[in-house]
Length: 83
Image (cartoon, rainbow, N blue to C red; front, side, top):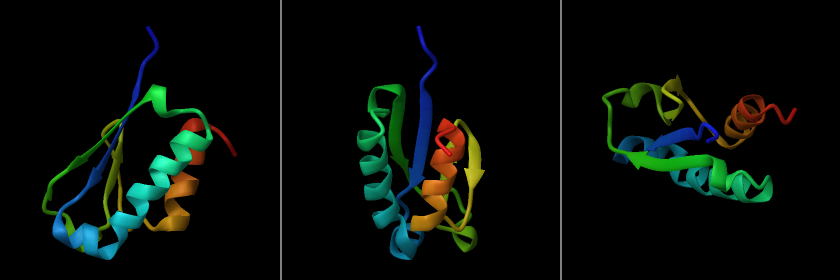
């Protein structure tokens, strides 16, 4: 069985207002366009108290902060080695 990547995006009000609503959609599009959806568990979580560093995202427990539309594509490309 192949290991699944876990992507967890903060859906707390601060991160959501700072742009995670857009990042959420970009991740879904990215996974579909690159045929990765079946290899990823993609979920949302509530605030972890790091609002000042938001928008926040985790991939396999590694935290990413200040994630915007450009950063998320770069993060995903590096993780999935698509660069």
